[in-house]
Image (tube, rainbow, N blue to C red; front, side, top):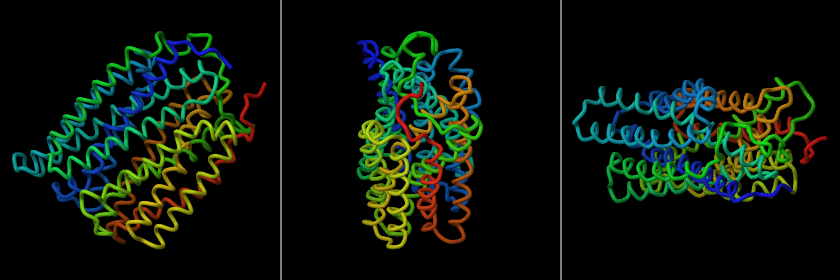
Length: 406
Protein backbone atom coordinates (compact mmCIF):
# COMPACT_ATOMS: atom_id res chain seq x y z
CA UNK A 1 0.00 0.00 0.00
CA UNK A 2 1.37 3.38 -1.01
CA UNK A 3 1.71 6.09 1.62
CA UNK A 4 -0.95 8.76 1.08
CA UNK A 5 0.22 12.34 1.61
CA UNK A 6 -1.84 15.28 2.86
CA UNK A 7 -1.68 16.78 -0.64
CA UNK A 8 -3.18 13.62 -2.11
CA UNK A 9 -5.99 13.59 0.48
CA UNK A 10 -6.77 17.23 -0.32
CA UNK A 11 -6.81 16.40 -4.01
CA UNK A 12 -9.26 13.56 -3.36
CA UNK A 13 -11.58 15.95 -1.51
CA UNK A 14 -11.28 18.47 -4.35
CA UNK A 15 -12.15 15.91 -7.02
CA UNK A 16 -15.06 14.73 -4.88
CA UNK A 17 -16.37 18.31 -4.81
CA UNK A 18 -16.04 18.61 -8.60
CA UNK A 19 -18.02 15.42 -9.15
CA UNK A 20 -20.69 16.58 -6.70
CA UNK A 21 -21.16 19.93 -8.41
CA UNK A 22 -21.34 18.33 -11.85
CA UNK A 23 -24.14 16.00 -10.77
CA UNK A 24 -26.05 18.74 -8.97
CA UNK A 25 -25.99 21.19 -11.87
CA UNK A 26 -27.56 18.80 -14.37
CA UNK A 27 -30.03 17.41 -11.83
CA UNK A 28 -31.45 20.86 -11.22
CA UNK A 29 -32.77 20.95 -14.77
CA UNK A 30 -34.11 17.39 -15.07
CA UNK A 31 -37.25 17.68 -12.87
CA UNK A 32 -38.15 20.72 -14.99
CA UNK A 33 -38.25 18.69 -18.22
CA UNK A 34 -42.04 18.17 -18.20
CA UNK A 35 -42.60 21.91 -17.70
CA UNK A 36 -40.12 22.69 -20.51
CA UNK A 37 -42.05 20.30 -22.76
CA UNK A 38 -45.28 22.13 -21.91
CA UNK A 39 -43.89 25.68 -22.27
CA UNK A 40 -42.54 25.02 -25.75
CA UNK A 41 -45.51 22.77 -26.70
CA UNK A 42 -43.27 19.88 -27.76
CA UNK A 43 -44.44 16.55 -29.14
CA UNK A 44 -42.86 13.36 -27.81
CA UNK A 45 -40.41 13.13 -30.71
CA UNK A 46 -39.49 16.83 -30.56
CA UNK A 47 -39.03 16.53 -26.82
CA UNK A 48 -36.70 13.59 -27.43
CA UNK A 49 -34.73 15.62 -29.96
CA UNK A 50 -34.52 18.49 -27.49
CA UNK A 51 -33.15 16.24 -24.75
CA UNK A 52 -30.66 14.90 -27.32
CA UNK A 53 -29.19 18.38 -27.79
CA UNK A 54 -27.27 17.92 -24.54
CA UNK A 55 -25.42 14.78 -25.66
CA UNK A 56 -25.02 16.30 -29.14
CA UNK A 57 -23.20 19.20 -27.53
CA UNK A 58 -21.24 16.68 -25.49
CA UNK A 59 -20.24 14.76 -28.59
CA UNK A 60 -18.92 17.96 -30.17
CA UNK A 61 -17.26 19.11 -26.96
CA UNK A 62 -15.63 15.73 -26.46
CA UNK A 63 -13.70 16.22 -29.69
CA UNK A 64 -11.53 18.89 -28.03
CA UNK A 65 -11.26 17.36 -24.55
CA UNK A 66 -7.88 15.65 -25.02
CA UNK A 67 -6.40 18.85 -26.48
CA UNK A 68 -7.87 20.97 -23.66
CA UNK A 69 -6.45 18.67 -20.97
CA UNK A 70 -3.01 18.69 -22.59
CA UNK A 71 -3.08 22.49 -22.78
CA UNK A 72 -4.58 23.43 -19.40
CA UNK A 73 -4.56 20.24 -17.31
CA UNK A 74 -7.46 18.08 -16.19
CA UNK A 75 -8.14 20.02 -12.99
CA UNK A 76 -8.44 23.42 -14.67
CA UNK A 77 -10.61 22.00 -17.45
CA UNK A 78 -12.97 20.49 -14.88
CA UNK A 79 -13.14 23.50 -12.53
CA UNK A 80 -13.35 26.25 -15.15
CA UNK A 81 -15.85 24.20 -17.10
CA UNK A 82 -17.99 23.91 -13.96
CA UNK A 83 -18.18 27.71 -13.65
CA UNK A 84 -19.14 28.10 -17.31
CA UNK A 85 -21.70 25.31 -16.96
CA UNK A 86 -23.37 27.13 -14.06
CA UNK A 87 -23.78 30.26 -16.20
CA UNK A 88 -25.15 28.29 -19.15
CA UNK A 89 -27.74 26.42 -17.07
CA UNK A 90 -28.89 29.71 -15.54
CA UNK A 91 -29.25 31.18 -19.04
CA UNK A 92 -31.25 28.16 -20.20
CA UNK A 93 -33.52 28.48 -17.17
CA UNK A 94 -34.24 32.16 -17.76
CA UNK A 95 -35.04 31.48 -21.43
CA UNK A 96 -37.73 29.03 -20.31
CA UNK A 97 -39.07 31.54 -17.77
CA UNK A 98 -39.14 34.37 -20.32
CA UNK A 99 -40.95 32.19 -22.84
CA UNK A 100 -43.48 31.05 -20.25
CA UNK A 101 -44.15 34.68 -19.28
CA UNK A 102 -44.65 35.68 -22.92
CA UNK A 103 -41.60 37.96 -23.04
CA UNK A 104 -40.18 35.77 -25.79
CA UNK A 105 -42.12 34.14 -28.60
CA UNK A 106 -42.31 30.36 -28.40
CA UNK A 107 -40.23 29.92 -31.57
CA UNK A 108 -37.49 32.38 -30.62
CA UNK A 109 -37.46 31.22 -27.01
CA UNK A 110 -37.17 27.58 -28.02
CA UNK A 111 -34.35 28.28 -30.49
CA UNK A 112 -32.40 30.20 -27.83
CA UNK A 113 -33.04 27.52 -25.22
CA UNK A 114 -31.94 24.80 -27.64
CA UNK A 115 -28.69 26.66 -28.35
CA UNK A 116 -27.94 27.16 -24.65
CA UNK A 117 -28.77 23.52 -23.85
CA UNK A 118 -26.43 22.39 -26.63
CA UNK A 119 -23.71 24.61 -25.12
CA UNK A 120 -24.34 23.03 -21.71
CA UNK A 121 -23.63 19.61 -23.21
CA UNK A 122 -20.50 20.89 -24.98
CA UNK A 123 -19.11 22.20 -21.71
CA UNK A 124 -20.22 19.20 -19.65
CA UNK A 125 -18.25 16.78 -21.85
CA UNK A 126 -15.02 18.57 -21.00
CA UNK A 127 -15.88 18.76 -17.30
CA UNK A 128 -16.75 15.05 -17.26
CA UNK A 129 -13.53 13.78 -18.82
CA UNK A 130 -11.44 16.36 -16.94
CA UNK A 131 -12.71 15.32 -13.53
CA UNK A 132 -12.44 11.60 -14.35
CA UNK A 133 -8.88 12.02 -15.64
CA UNK A 134 -7.91 13.92 -12.50
CA UNK A 135 -9.69 11.38 -10.32
CA UNK A 136 -7.68 8.58 -11.91
CA UNK A 137 -4.48 10.56 -11.20
CA UNK A 138 -5.46 10.69 -7.54
CA UNK A 139 -6.42 7.00 -7.52
CA UNK A 140 -2.97 6.03 -8.81
CA UNK A 141 -1.43 7.84 -5.85
CA UNK A 142 -3.68 5.93 -3.47
CA UNK A 143 -2.78 2.59 -5.02
CA UNK A 144 -6.29 1.18 -4.57
CA UNK A 145 -9.75 1.65 -6.04
CA UNK A 146 -11.38 4.96 -5.09
CA UNK A 147 -12.97 5.90 -8.44
CA UNK A 148 -16.42 4.75 -7.28
CA UNK A 149 -16.29 7.19 -4.37
CA UNK A 150 -15.95 10.04 -6.88
CA UNK A 151 -18.92 8.78 -8.85
CA UNK A 152 -20.78 8.41 -5.55
CA UNK A 153 -20.23 12.13 -5.05
CA UNK A 154 -21.68 12.73 -8.53
CA UNK A 155 -24.75 10.67 -7.62
CA UNK A 156 -24.99 12.58 -4.34
CA UNK A 157 -24.95 15.80 -6.32
CA UNK A 158 -27.73 14.47 -8.53
CA UNK A 159 -29.85 13.64 -5.48
CA UNK A 160 -29.17 17.05 -3.91
CA UNK A 161 -29.84 18.90 -7.15
CA UNK A 162 -32.99 16.89 -7.83
CA UNK A 163 -34.36 17.46 -4.33
CA UNK A 164 -33.62 21.19 -4.53
CA UNK A 165 -35.43 21.31 -7.86
CA UNK A 166 -38.44 19.46 -6.44
CA UNK A 167 -38.60 21.94 -3.54
CA UNK A 168 -38.29 24.86 -5.97
CA UNK A 169 -41.17 23.48 -8.03
CA UNK A 170 -43.30 22.90 -4.92
CA UNK A 171 -42.87 26.51 -3.70
CA UNK A 172 -43.37 27.95 -7.19
CA UNK A 173 -39.85 29.32 -7.72
CA UNK A 174 -39.39 30.08 -11.45
CA UNK A 175 -36.83 27.94 -13.22
CA UNK A 176 -34.66 30.94 -14.12
CA UNK A 177 -34.11 32.04 -10.53
CA UNK A 178 -33.79 28.44 -9.41
CA UNK A 179 -31.00 27.70 -11.91
CA UNK A 180 -29.26 31.01 -11.18
CA UNK A 181 -29.06 30.23 -7.46
CA UNK A 182 -28.04 26.61 -7.98
CA UNK A 183 -25.58 27.43 -10.77
CA UNK A 184 -23.89 30.18 -8.77
CA UNK A 185 -23.58 28.07 -5.62
CA UNK A 186 -22.19 24.95 -7.29
CA UNK A 187 -19.90 26.88 -9.65
CA UNK A 188 -18.36 28.65 -6.63
CA UNK A 189 -17.76 25.31 -4.93
CA UNK A 190 -15.99 24.06 -8.05
CA UNK A 191 -13.65 27.06 -8.07
CA UNK A 192 -12.73 26.54 -4.42
CA UNK A 193 -11.95 22.89 -5.21
CA UNK A 194 -9.46 23.90 -7.91
CA UNK A 195 -7.05 25.24 -5.28
CA UNK A 196 -6.57 21.76 -3.81
CA UNK A 197 -6.17 19.63 -6.94
CA UNK A 198 -2.87 17.99 -7.93
CA UNK A 199 -0.36 20.37 -9.53
CA UNK A 200 1.51 19.90 -12.79
CA UNK A 201 0.70 18.20 -16.09
CA UNK A 202 -0.83 14.75 -16.38
CA UNK A 203 1.25 11.70 -15.50
CA UNK A 204 4.45 13.52 -14.60
CA UNK A 205 4.73 12.14 -11.08
CA UNK A 206 6.33 8.79 -10.30
CA UNK A 207 3.47 7.94 -7.93
CA UNK A 208 1.10 8.20 -10.88
CA UNK A 209 3.03 5.85 -13.16
CA UNK A 210 2.34 2.65 -11.21
CA UNK A 211 -1.33 1.74 -10.98
CA UNK A 212 -2.12 -0.93 -8.43
CA UNK A 213 -5.83 -0.08 -8.76
CA UNK A 214 -6.02 -1.00 -12.46
CA UNK A 215 -9.02 -2.98 -13.71
CA UNK A 216 -7.92 -5.50 -16.34
CA UNK A 217 -9.73 -6.96 -19.32
CA UNK A 218 -9.36 -10.52 -20.57
CA UNK A 219 -6.51 -11.17 -22.99
CA UNK A 220 -7.95 -9.95 -26.29
CA UNK A 221 -6.87 -7.24 -28.72
CA UNK A 222 -7.01 -3.64 -27.42
CA UNK A 223 -9.64 -2.68 -30.00
CA UNK A 224 -11.94 -5.57 -29.07
CA UNK A 225 -11.46 -4.88 -25.38
CA UNK A 226 -12.29 -1.20 -25.84
CA UNK A 227 -15.34 -2.03 -27.98
CA UNK A 228 -16.67 -4.40 -25.31
CA UNK A 229 -16.10 -1.80 -22.58
CA UNK A 230 -17.93 0.82 -24.65
CA UNK A 231 -20.89 -1.56 -25.06
CA UNK A 232 -20.83 -2.26 -21.30
CA UNK A 233 -20.69 1.42 -20.35
CA UNK A 234 -23.48 2.41 -22.76
CA UNK A 235 -25.76 -0.34 -21.43
CA UNK A 236 -25.06 0.73 -17.85
CA UNK A 237 -25.39 4.44 -18.53
CA UNK A 238 -28.76 3.90 -20.22
CA UNK A 239 -30.20 3.65 -16.71
CA UNK A 240 -29.00 7.19 -15.94
CA UNK A 241 -30.07 8.50 -19.34
CA UNK A 242 -33.60 7.09 -19.23
CA UNK A 243 -34.11 8.07 -15.61
CA UNK A 244 -33.12 11.64 -16.49
CA UNK A 245 -35.09 11.94 -19.71
CA UNK A 246 -38.24 9.87 -19.15
CA UNK A 247 -38.86 8.78 -15.56
CA UNK A 248 -40.42 12.08 -14.43
CA UNK A 249 -42.57 12.28 -17.56
CA UNK A 250 -43.65 8.64 -17.12
CA UNK A 251 -44.66 9.26 -13.51
CA UNK A 252 -46.68 12.35 -14.41
CA UNK A 253 -48.28 11.42 -17.73
CA UNK A 254 -48.76 7.64 -17.41
CA UNK A 255 -49.18 7.14 -13.66
CA UNK A 256 -50.83 10.51 -12.94
CA UNK A 257 -48.45 11.58 -10.17
CA UNK A 258 -48.38 15.30 -9.28
CA UNK A 259 -45.59 17.48 -10.67
CA UNK A 260 -44.06 17.98 -7.21
CA UNK A 261 -43.78 14.20 -6.65
CA UNK A 262 -43.19 13.04 -10.22
CA UNK A 263 -39.44 13.43 -9.77
CA UNK A 264 -39.40 10.87 -6.94
CA UNK A 265 -38.54 7.94 -9.25
CA UNK A 266 -35.66 9.92 -10.72
CA UNK A 267 -34.39 10.84 -7.26
CA UNK A 268 -34.80 7.22 -6.07
CA UNK A 269 -32.70 5.92 -8.96
CA UNK A 270 -29.83 8.25 -8.19
CA UNK A 271 -30.12 7.92 -4.40
CA UNK A 272 -29.73 4.15 -4.81
CA UNK A 273 -26.90 4.71 -7.25
CA UNK A 274 -25.23 6.90 -4.64
CA UNK A 275 -25.43 4.09 -2.07
CA UNK A 276 -24.07 1.61 -4.61
CA UNK A 277 -21.13 3.83 -5.35
CA UNK A 278 -20.41 4.46 -1.69
CA UNK A 279 -19.95 0.71 -1.16
CA UNK A 280 -18.71 0.00 -4.69
CA UNK A 281 -14.98 0.14 -4.03
CA UNK A 282 -15.32 -2.30 -1.12
CA UNK A 283 -17.46 -4.66 -3.21
CA UNK A 284 -14.86 -4.61 -5.98
CA UNK A 285 -12.05 -5.34 -3.51
CA UNK A 286 -14.01 -8.28 -2.05
CA UNK A 287 -15.63 -9.86 -5.13
CA UNK A 288 -13.82 -8.46 -8.15
CA UNK A 289 -15.18 -6.14 -10.86
CA UNK A 290 -16.65 -8.85 -13.09
CA UNK A 291 -18.83 -10.31 -10.34
CA UNK A 292 -19.97 -6.86 -9.19
CA UNK A 293 -20.94 -5.86 -12.73
CA UNK A 294 -22.79 -9.13 -13.36
CA UNK A 295 -24.83 -8.80 -10.16
CA UNK A 296 -25.58 -5.19 -11.05
CA UNK A 297 -26.94 -6.23 -14.43
CA UNK A 298 -29.16 -8.79 -12.70
CA UNK A 299 -30.62 -6.13 -10.38
CA UNK A 300 -31.37 -3.85 -13.33
CA UNK A 301 -33.07 -6.66 -15.24
CA UNK A 302 -35.22 -7.97 -12.38
CA UNK A 303 -36.17 -4.53 -11.02
CA UNK A 304 -37.22 -3.05 -14.33
CA UNK A 305 -39.02 -6.12 -15.65
CA UNK A 306 -41.10 -6.15 -12.45
CA UNK A 307 -41.88 -2.42 -12.63
CA UNK A 308 -42.92 -2.64 -16.28
CA UNK A 309 -45.09 -5.74 -15.83
CA UNK A 310 -46.84 -4.34 -12.73
CA UNK A 311 -46.94 -0.54 -13.28
CA UNK A 312 -47.56 1.65 -10.25
CA UNK A 313 -45.80 4.48 -8.47
CA UNK A 314 -44.40 2.02 -5.92
CA UNK A 315 -43.05 -0.50 -8.44
CA UNK A 316 -41.61 2.28 -10.62
CA UNK A 317 -39.76 3.92 -7.74
CA UNK A 318 -38.60 0.53 -6.44
CA UNK A 319 -37.58 -0.75 -9.87
CA UNK A 320 -35.60 2.37 -10.69
CA UNK A 321 -33.96 2.25 -7.26
CA UNK A 322 -32.80 -1.34 -7.93
CA UNK A 323 -31.63 -0.30 -11.39
CA UNK A 324 -29.78 2.68 -9.93
CA UNK A 325 -27.98 0.50 -7.39
CA UNK A 326 -27.20 -2.11 -10.05
CA UNK A 327 -25.76 0.47 -12.43
CA UNK A 328 -23.67 2.20 -9.75
CA UNK A 329 -20.26 0.72 -10.55
CA UNK A 330 -20.65 0.03 -14.28
CA UNK A 331 -19.39 3.29 -15.77
CA UNK A 332 -16.60 3.83 -13.18
CA UNK A 333 -15.28 0.30 -13.75
CA UNK A 334 -15.52 0.63 -17.53
CA UNK A 335 -13.66 3.96 -17.45
CA UNK A 336 -11.00 2.52 -15.14
CA UNK A 337 -10.50 -0.49 -17.41
CA UNK A 338 -10.48 1.63 -20.59
CA UNK A 339 -7.79 3.88 -19.15
CA UNK A 340 -5.55 0.86 -18.51
CA UNK A 341 -5.90 -1.21 -21.71
CA UNK A 342 -2.41 -2.45 -22.70
CA UNK A 343 -1.36 -1.21 -26.12
CA UNK A 344 -3.25 2.11 -25.97
CA UNK A 345 -1.70 5.48 -25.14
CA UNK A 346 -2.56 6.79 -21.65
CA UNK A 347 -5.96 8.48 -21.68
CA UNK A 348 -6.89 7.27 -25.18
CA UNK A 349 -9.26 4.54 -24.04
CA UNK A 350 -10.97 6.84 -21.52
CA UNK A 351 -11.46 9.64 -24.06
CA UNK A 352 -12.83 7.31 -26.77
CA UNK A 353 -15.19 5.57 -24.35
CA UNK A 354 -16.53 8.87 -22.98
CA UNK A 355 -17.03 10.27 -26.50
CA UNK A 356 -18.89 7.22 -27.81
CA UNK A 357 -21.08 7.12 -24.71
CA UNK A 358 -22.25 10.59 -25.68
CA UNK A 359 -22.94 9.43 -29.22
CA UNK A 360 -25.25 6.81 -27.71
CA UNK A 361 -26.90 9.44 -25.51
CA UNK A 362 -27.46 11.50 -28.65
CA UNK A 363 -29.26 8.67 -30.44
CA UNK A 364 -31.32 7.40 -27.50
CA UNK A 365 -33.74 10.29 -26.68
CA UNK A 366 -35.03 11.00 -30.23
CA UNK A 367 -35.34 7.29 -30.98
CA UNK A 368 -37.29 6.63 -27.79
CA UNK A 369 -39.25 9.87 -28.34
CA UNK A 370 -40.42 8.65 -31.75
CA UNK A 371 -41.51 5.35 -30.23
CA UNK A 372 -43.31 7.26 -27.44
CA UNK A 373 -45.27 9.24 -30.05
CA UNK A 374 -46.56 5.96 -31.47
CA UNK A 375 -47.01 3.74 -28.41
CA UNK A 376 -47.15 6.14 -25.45
CA UNK A 377 -44.76 7.19 -22.69
CA UNK A 378 -44.86 3.80 -20.94
CA UNK A 379 -42.50 2.25 -23.51
CA UNK A 380 -39.78 4.78 -22.61
CA UNK A 381 -38.59 2.63 -19.69
CA UNK A 382 -38.87 -0.74 -21.43
CA UNK A 383 -35.29 -0.40 -22.71
CA UNK A 384 -33.90 -0.79 -19.19
CA UNK A 385 -34.48 -4.50 -18.47
CA UNK A 386 -32.83 -5.33 -21.79
CA UNK A 387 -29.95 -3.01 -20.91
CA UNK A 388 -29.52 -5.11 -17.77
CA UNK A 389 -29.20 -8.26 -19.87
CA UNK A 390 -26.60 -6.50 -22.05
CA UNK A 391 -24.61 -5.59 -18.92
CA UNK A 392 -24.54 -9.23 -17.80
CA UNK A 393 -23.36 -10.40 -21.23
CA UNK A 394 -20.63 -7.77 -21.64
CA UNK A 395 -19.29 -8.12 -18.08
CA UNK A 396 -17.20 -11.08 -19.24
CA UNK A 397 -14.75 -8.73 -20.97
CA UNK A 398 -13.36 -8.06 -17.47
CA UNK A 399 -10.71 -10.33 -16.03
CA UNK A 400 -11.83 -12.40 -13.05
CA UNK A 401 -8.85 -11.43 -10.89
CA UNK A 402 -8.66 -8.13 -9.05
CA UNK A 403 -4.92 -7.76 -8.56
CA UNK A 404 -2.51 -6.27 -11.02
CA UNK A 405 -0.88 -8.90 -13.22
CA UNK A 406 2.91 -9.00 -13.05
